[in-house]
Image (tube, rainbow, N blue to C red; front, side):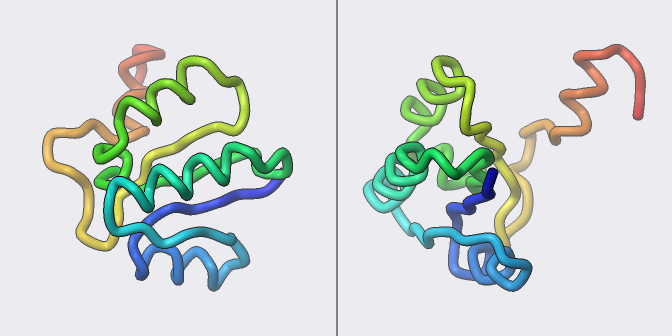
Length: 101
């Protein structure tokens, strides 16, 4: 199972330094193309996508998240940081299980 990252240049280059392949995207069309290509690859088990790019193609991301078991799609902050007001993964887990980690 492999990882794949979709993000801005800094994010993709940073993950590339540790061996994670990816695609740079700057707009909705590039993001959609990268996400569709990653979803077609059976070797990819986890797709990391920047929060800002995921927002550009939210209906597509949600469709994959709610209808497919694999690959897992995780939204991550990009070089500009987290989107204000969006809960972190840790906050969501804490709320779901009812205890603080």
